[in-house]
Amino acid sequence: MRNLWLFISKYNAFFFFIIFFIVSIILIVRNNSFQRAGVLNSSNKMIGQAYERLNQFQSYLSLAQVNDSLAAENARLRSELKTAFFDDSVVQKTVKDTAARQQYAYIVARVVNNSVHQKNNYLTINRGKKHGINKGMGVICTSGIVGIVKDVSDDFATVTSLLNSDTRISASIAESQAFGSLVWGEGNYNPQMALLQDIPNHIIVKKGQHVVTSGYSTLFPSGLPIGRVSGTRNQSGESFPDIIVRLNTDFATLQYVYVIRNVFAMEKENLEAISKNNDE
Image (cartoon, rainbow, N blue to C red; front, top):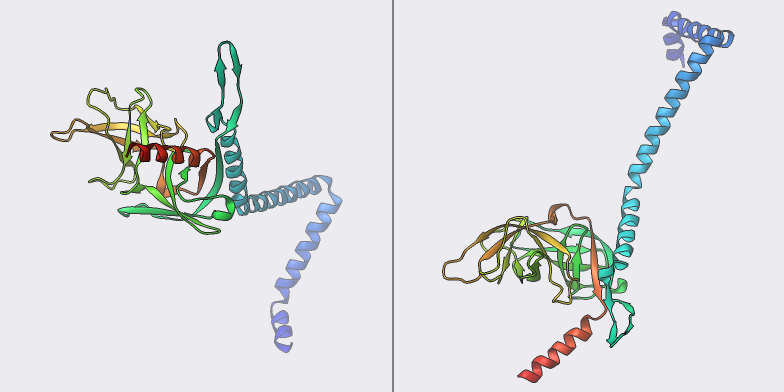
């Protein structure tokens, strides 16, 4: 306490100056309308800027919640697309009975782990059995194909990425409808490139053509974007050149994905298995 009084007495002139200065400012502002208006405008501007920055900070903190809601809305909208329905029409003479049945449903999930620079890459998503995820389901994002569900627990699932040497996706060239198998990693582990194989030599392939899902598997609806033709690579003695595809999906920045549930998948697979067994 004694030291405080010594400090104040030593610098009393400075403290008196501050006190008189503040009092004079108050008197000027209170007794002069022009100065009072200027001070009010300045203070309102400062308060407004402070509120604006606080609002920006609060908005930043709520970005995760906003992204979750947008991803859920995208999943709902995808489920309402025409390609998500099965045309269950019956046509006989001039009578047509049409009923659009839901074939594909989309379950939104957030990527919680991801790899892109390995020979065999995987993702982990925060959705599992209790959310309707099963092994073998296709996974996409807003820009293209992501992969196939590998293993599932109650709350999580691992996904075999398209950037995996074991992944094969049935794909086609949209302009010609020619289809083949999309693979990755054969001599090139570029996360932006893949190879479309088994397209015959007589098919004219041009740079820039669109590569999409063929719809021949139960994983993906037809016509989903995969990438664009970047070039071709002829193998000596082979009648099927490798078509180099630049992928739409940026695997390094994946945050949200959509798992596709095909309502008719089991029915189709069981029927094809019966036909195969009968042939054998």
